Amino acid sequence: MTDALVVVNPTARNGAARAMIPVVTDILRSHGWSVDVAVTESAEHAVQIAAAAEPDDQLLVALGGDGLVARVAEGAIRSGALVAPLPGGRGCDFIRALGGSRDLRQATSSLPLATERRVDVGLAGGTPFLGVATVGYDSRANDHANAAPAWLPAALVYAYGGARALLETRTTSITMTTDGQARTFDGWSVAIGNSGRYGAGMRANPDALLDDGELDVTTVEGLPRWKYPMLLPRYFRGTHVDGVDIRADRGSTIDVTSPTGYRVYADGDIVGETPMTFTVRQQELRVLVHAVTQGSGHRRDRGVDSQ
Image (cartoon, rainbow, N blue to C red; front, side, top):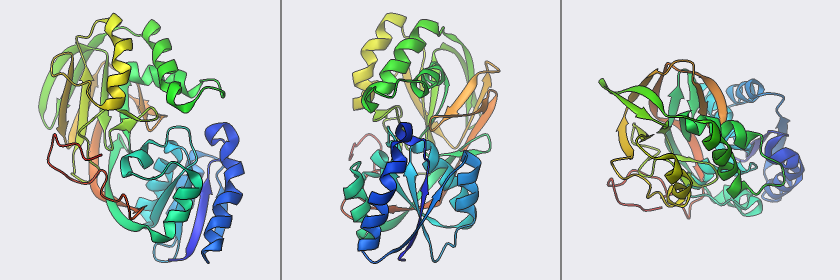
């Protein structure tokens, strides 16, 4: 396959993604590829572009943040097209989960040598997501992270959002059902992960895999407010789950039935409100992965970290 359609979110990284277009097209054309560019006008427009792609003839190159990659993936599921995500956003968490480079030139230059892999896609209600869907404190932190100042480094965006959310959020009674097993607890948040990555490298669901047919769930429950800021480094290492205040579970169907009316975020975008059902479609998406690091995020023995 040597035909590429570069799908661009012009607002990604506070508008910097638009300036990346010539870099990507020049590199691909230097390898003999035929390249077209589609600049998206909305999330739905990105879905439509990907849904109309020719699966056997055209590579969909997603140049933007995780939200754009998720919308391109949504359309690619319909068309069967192959997707190559490039680091055009601030977080690039799906690329991190795949083990890909976050350097634009290196990532683009690697595409002619990359290989295809199939990965799972989560569904938040009916909306596909690749990384993490959140309810509660994490969703409020997303509100503030999305409104963070442009000058703030990507690695600090979620810390900024989290700090502001901490002043506003209270624990609440949450009812969650995992593959038919219901429980109610007083807690801060629920994070439902496909790749398990969000917030520019945070590993909300540290054992999540992209091809196991399950969603991983991390719940923050009896944690005192004063401990929350100290958790941030552990989230980046993936060592925050202790089985007491922060618990992990997994399943193929997750229902969050209460509280009602809480906003649900997935891959950094609002996708609806609770109650909501989260499901997974196993190995539904075709992605192009750099041949050197394609092992990252594959199925492995639980508890053994290969990333």
